[in-house]
Amino acid sequence: MSGLDTPERGFQISRRQALAALGLVGVAGADAVTRTPSAYAADRGGVPTISGRVVAVGIPGASAIAPVGTFLPGSPIHSNPVLAAFTQPGRVCDPTRIVVGSRSNFGAPKANPDQAAGSFLSIDPGGADLAVPDRFAASGGQASALGGAVQMYSAQSPNWRNGFYTPGAVTADQTAVANPLGMSINNAFGRFWPANAPYGLNGPGSSSIADPDGRPLAGAPNPTTGGVYFGDITGRTPTQVIPGAISKAAVGTALIGRSPDGSGRAVFAVVVADGSVVQEHTVKALDGIAPPRTVQPLVHRSWGHDSGHRGRVPLPRLGVLISYAPELILYVSQPFDDSIKVIELTIGGPQGNEVFVPSGLRTIRSSALDQPLDLAPVRIDTTHPDHASNTTLQPGSDIYICNRGNDTIVRMRQDGTTVGVRRVRLGRHSLGGARLNGIATSTDGSRIWVTYVGALPGGDDAEGGVLELPAF
Figure (cartoon, one colour):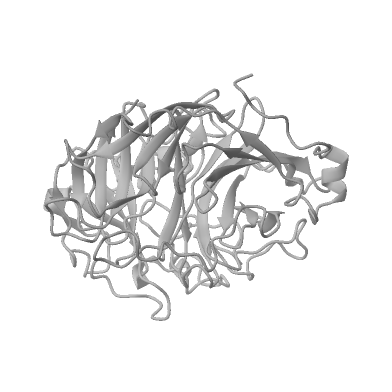
């Protein structure tokens, strides 16, 4: 049984209990703990290394990273010719490219002066040492630099307001991206879903549905929400099935799949900095899943000034993954607890308005975990018509865990057993003052991409960038 401890005595939530307790009172406190064996302790004096190459530099606060991937037949980006044009070779949504979050607008003017800037870049990962120009997007559109190797996807700029396509939305003034901390791409039947911290960790957050042009959803089926969920103003109306809001920053997100209400619409899980988890429905707006402190909160947390780099210290963030078979499970990293929260999901709620509810909680602990700030599938699900996404585990896939604390990547089974640990280096050198800040896997499973913040050894760029590593 791989050395797992028995969950805490008496912890079990039945389907009936989950339905009866949609407020989920006490769920966060009834937490089982899984303690796992680890190869890392034995290797502490000589952890195997993995050598990376520099893809891009000059990305301030480089954070969430994801492969664009292929959108499946039947999805709007595949089947709508206007949207599909953006996926052609060399275009911003070319399946071979990666998208990378940044706290910079790269020269694009702000849409909302009181909010933080921020953007997602589309980058050709085949490039090397790409130095991103700091104002290449000053025109305010999907600008291009370095022969198209770097392109703007979306930013906190007027071109990407929700009101462009949905002027009557309550979030018409909000943009698809603002200080982004997460990205989940619905390759199965949808679009891009960024998670944002426009007012830092302690202010209200946002999450959006973005088209290939970087703007919030055109033809939105909910004219009140449009393509942006924000704070407490985009909850399900007239009444939420489960209370919830993005009252603090959105710090991670993952596609759950199609709604259990039979509508066929997408539902995403968004983790909020207060430790709550919400679910977003493209038609019925936002409900809760789990209350504050279910996940260890990130509000009032900071990396401090221990990162050793000269640039601004980035906001803490976390990773979110979904496993849909044999059970529906949400994995969330807890960087300040050196652990991973495991939230088992089931279906509850009134007929016709069914939602996802938690049926169990446990925590994975391992000495291999050292500020685990992001997660990625070892094998991404790229083929399931309801689940294909960069944040979806192929059934049976292991998990890559990105440790900020010691610049290592851990490969771990879903039961918490550590398979291997690798310390990230550049050739024979450590990362110096840089710290890892995000992780993604290529769709074919052969490569790992990581974002970093701070200065690499021998370099004078203290902003951040992207490294490519071989899979292991």
